[in-house]
Image (cartoon, rainbow, N blue to C red; front, side, top):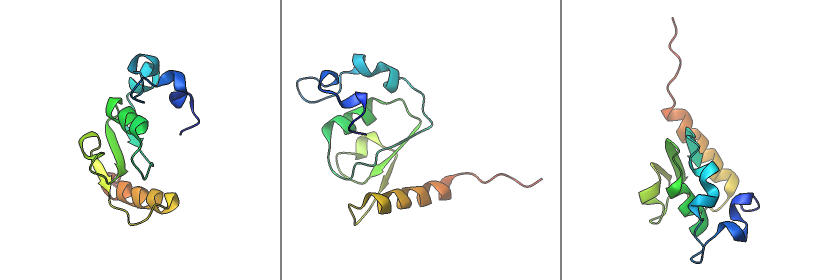
Length: 101
């Protein structure tokens, strides 16, 4: 989310990379899931995803995102709603269903 505290100028270094020390509170959170909804290359967001200790990371497919995400979604659209729906559908497919007793 571009307008959050994580992308104020003071949180970015010279190369437009997030400064890990200033974002430790976010980076060190053991999130189960990190969803990158940025459909285009964005260095600060990509770096934040790379730094994150989230257990599972999902993003739109791109060559740049490949090393930092476990799930990449091919999308023929830059429509954020369509991308979100595709991600949700995929996550529902891989989520274990509760067993009936």
